[in-house]
Amino acid sequence: MNRRHFLQSIGAAAATAATTAAVPAWAQQSDAASASYRRAPELFQANPRLTCLRGFQGQDISSDAAWIEGKLPADLRGDFYRNGPGLFERGGQRYHHWFDGDGLVHAWRFGDKGVSHQARFVRTKKFVAEQQAGEFLVPAFGTAIKPKIPLRSSDTMNTANTNVIRMDGRLLALWEGGSAHAMDAQSLETQGIVNWAPELAGMPFSAHPKMEADGSLWNFGTMMGKIVLYHFSPQGKLLKHRIMNAPSTAMVHDFAISQKHMIFLFSPISLNMDAVRSGKSMVDAMEWKANESVKIMVVEKADFSRFRILEIPALMLFHFGNAWEENNVIHVDFVKSDNLDNFHTWMPKIMRGEDVVSEPSSPAFLQIDLNRNKVSLTERSENLEFPRVDPRVVGQRNRYLYYPVAVEKTMNNMLNGVMRLDVETGKTDSFSFGAHCHLEEHVVVPKAGSTKEGEAWLVGVGFDIPHQTSFASVFDAQNLAAGPVALAHLPYWLPHCFHGNFYAST
Image 1: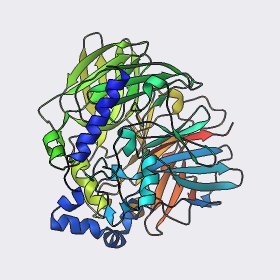
Image 2: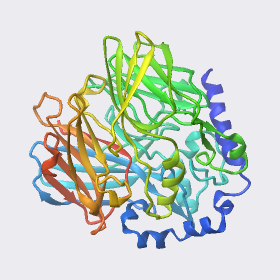
Image 3: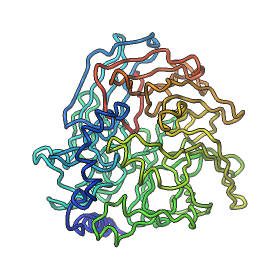
Image 4: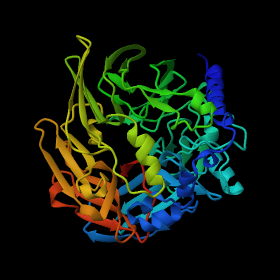
């Protein structure tokens, strides 16, 4: 399929999903559901645990000096960038799904004088147009809004809200359904959509690129039964790409790389186009096919045209930790859930300010034997998400995995602790903040001068429920049970983020 036809299919899919809805989903809800969304501010005031999911109104925010509790490590210097949906309401209407909000990029800057914070909304075409109009103008992933401007491609709806990486001197705000948006790394000023090559303009570029220790970067994008594969040099130059057919699924969020392969899991999710045409959002039109298999696609990094597909029983996943291979056997870890219940039920409820119990998700491990085309799966029981590894071992054999974990069960499975898993021994090291806060993803930052995996700081962000403020946390990754060595408290709360990365000062 050539680029022109591919982009036409993207535009047609977007237009079909949007224009077939006769009225906005807001008006299609039952009276009770519609009223609950309109009462969202009241519900969030009554439920302070979910304040950070209420969102901002489009304002940027900054603080020159966070209050430091404990002592910042002397070698922890650099910029910790985060990205997530930050705006959910316009003109009296509120999005129904957490994934819909406009991207808000954060810079936590760790320096000799302490920690500062800055956050700016990504000035996508969508954001700018809707700021001027004072209302939502285009459909969202989980909210079926009747379009009020032409839908020329998926970038018309691009929220740039899922991850942020630094590449070739620029920040890139990422959203898996469309193009990356470049930002200035210091001012966080939006510079515009990134085109890797003329023939790739408008191609989807996922929010989970994988960077190896030498700086090589791999990524993908999926839409309409196709997958786009990318390989970049450490200098940010596109080395190769390929568009190819892929197993059918309505959503692929993440992937993994090993020394020689790219690994994808295609969960059995179909998109009911009749439901879309009747006015449902893309999320509401997704159907879980429990009796169908997960397709595992293993692609050779040296030659994108060489791949194989294997199968395992149905399961759902959003995030991988890492992959490595030995003797032609690939070891892959990820976080597994049973189906789409959290996606369909829990997320819309918390977006209304309802404090509900989420379905658990747990560590899972695959062994893909390429010699025999056999796959085996093992699992653990902890309830957690957002796995990360030491960046020095991405795509290589790793011993440790790090997660935010649900420890305090009175918080309805919200993540309120951190955990390190030793995959060789099965032992864990963890710390719980208790019921007074919940946490975002934490990332691994190697200690200055260290060479050994795990000799690092674990850095993340959390929400302090009693004080209604946000903080950055720093742990010694080799001793989580000792608690954070430092907390950097802001005088305000922040919308909950998805993903980000720490870039040490050179």
